[in-house]
Image 1 (cartoon, each protein chain N blue to C red):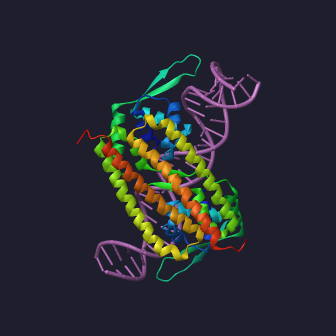
Image 2 (cartoon, rainbow over the protein chains, first blue to last red):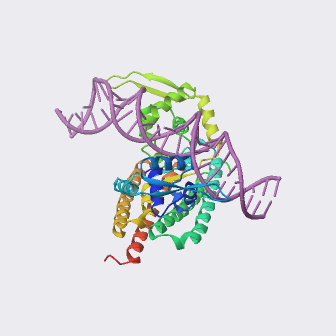
Image 3 (cartoon, rainbow over the protein chains, first blue to last red):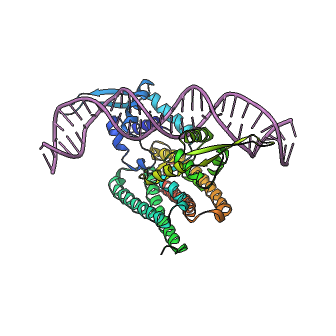
Length: 177
Length: 177
DNA sequence: CAACCCATGTAAATCGTTACATGATTTG
DNA sequence: CAAATCATGTAACGATTTACATGGGTTG
């Protein structure tokens, strides 16, 4: 899976500009995949050259002109091929967790501060997802709802496990208190 | 955070070869970060050139010679700088979830099959982590235990949410039955 | 004797981020 | 009038994966 596959998937729903695609990454999808303009525009170029999408230039008044891309039959076929390929292994890459993994080399209070900060940040993200759910829910497919729910619950468990871990860390050894 | 930071962190505990480092990625750490030989060896080379680690060649009988790397004071300082830098955003990149996100364009039974497979795979990973926990637990630091617990619980929720989602998906519309 | 473990490395290819570059219009 | 929105793109750089390349020793 790469940006080509995801962008083709997004275009299944209808023609879009690169700018609009970027905005679609501010949905539950962003929890599992994200792309910047620096990826989106070159990818659209590649997909067009390969014949998977076609560009239509739209001249606008009072706005910059835009390029609207539509998926072709070749593009749909390419997307089907992606779905036929074996799914890649999941990768939960977490800088914070790596730091925590090396926590034994730090002061207990330093690690505790890291964890508290991670909890706060996760709570913020959870609230954003919860607000997002209220907004997006009506237009989401059942499948997408599962994605959103997973994002929500993953954050909830993370908060719970970190809170429990913090408590254990602080009770385990009282040396510096 | 990149492989340099993680490898320095691993060497805080004592000198290691590239081969041994690779094996350390078969621990709870692999849940949050992984690296292949193609990353490890060039990274060790860079770290050595930068003076963050030093190499000692060890000649062995009946085995290929090995290069044992130790962290230097400059390396420890570099690791401290990494810890002082702001943690990067987490990235839960999931091919399966992306596919699920586009599930509305597939047959309901196809999506259900995807979900069932994901549940099975997650259960397998969960069991492996549980077995690993029994093995590693005695030698793990409190911080590392939090990492492991998070890995465990994240998998558990994922299974629960997918099972619930599957049930809803199948009950929501009975059209094809 | 096949398979696996030990052990190190290189090269090509792919992929992606960040920063740069531009510029009109609308909104507070 | 500053900031945000709309809108597209390029270039440099960095990171990583996969495959290739080698080869002796041990174990079942």
